[in-house]
Image 1 (cartoon, rainbow, N blue to C red):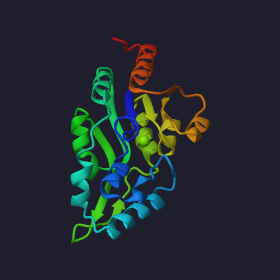
Image 2: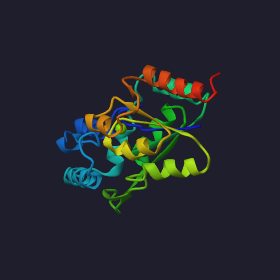
Image 3: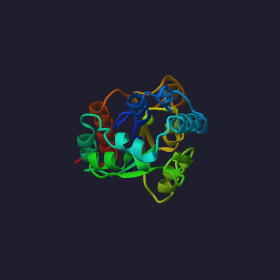
Length: 205
Ligand SMILES: [Mg+2]
């Protein structure tokens, strides 16, 4: 068994709106909860950041302050007593590495920025976009059963590919697209859903 869990909106707040608040850039408040056009979203974000003259280092200084949701490290610690955890996110490694440490040192699969010689973001390498399901599919082919949990449209393929999808405070369209998955509203409920799956599979300690 392997757990593939989304980051933002599940284990930690969305990082882009946090940057938007700090730097007073309204365009950064749009997230994958609002749009499934990720390239369009990224273009809007990067244009806005470059107009404001921000370097990646400026953004990192603030993004690195983001704390996990209360209880998220404990949730992961409990789940990891039963199975391995992969965090599969459309965030960027450059933003989220300290957050991973605060979550207990879990593995992150995410995207990377391309930076020009002045330190401004000039592009992005999408290793995850549209491929959450490919990561899950690969692990399934290696023989793992997958528990998937996410909150937004960018988790749709992950949830559709997982053996045991769980919707975490989902946007409405996600509920409609994955109608038979359990819906949880917090990390306590999520842990109960995970434990029920472990128990069904005979790995309840
Ligand atoms: Mg999310």
